[in-house]
Length: 395
Image 1 (spheres, rainbow, N blue to C red):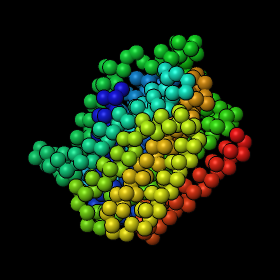
Image 2 (cartoon, rainbow, N blue to C red):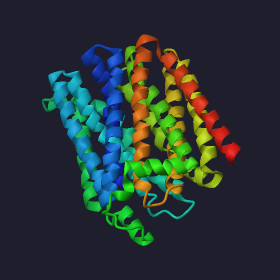
Image 3 (tube, one colour):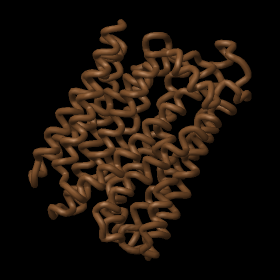
Image 4 (tube, helix red, strand yellow):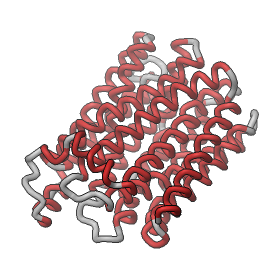
């Protein structure tokens, strides 16, 4: 599973570093460039429930395979779109590339299927951490992949997407060949939760019913959604801001790499802290880090070092929200209902993230990057206050 996470992380990160810049160049519009992040996040949302349904019916291997096949197809379409200089086709390809994100998110839950009680956050965080190598290296491979692609006859900036296609193909092979035994199928067998081939426990209706009767799960889902929305809103527009400020691909790649390092490198520490100190305190910590990131980004001006610091804090806050929130979702839901609720969680976080990138593109295009930081800061502060008030009031 770790090898698949590394390969999938490379594929996602390579496209992440360049997608908004390429859309900006092809469309000539900063507002439209924000749709690049929107397309990827929307794709992850659209594929979240099919991935969860496939996992619930046939195990984690089937769900992850579906996600990585979609991402591979999306990369191929993106290469074609750049060759044709068609930004609408590129956005369509990026929707499918979102399957890589859906697969990476779904993979984290595979670590909790067999985890002992009280250790779900640590086990989940190790799978998240496995994305570090590929995700951090990915943006820095954009320039070499572009140069190799042009030598092979591809147009400029198509090479990174071709390289991402290769990475997703390798992740798919790893999942199909080496993810044995399937952790969800084995967990169901050990707990006597029923036939894993039955999909009736994993419907959207059942997931919503579970949320209505489990306040802690609702809080966790809201915090995951807010963390992800804050992260993708600022992150998706940062390459465009740096590009407009005169930064080259190497600088943009380095900033995104450090951001992704913030997202993943310390995730085992975040998981350990969540199991020891509690999931809700770590969620509150995540909101505080995201608030600090928004403040730094909003006041950065043309200072690249401050933008970089903001992106690192942004990654750390996201890590707290995702790891602690996902572990809380897993622990508060019976195993026979987990795939459906987990899929709904990923759907909601990515729908909110997609909406966030649309709004972010409009804010930056009409107002400024600083205004985006202010808006995200207000959202995060309100969410943190709501969590603290509802949790500590009710216990």
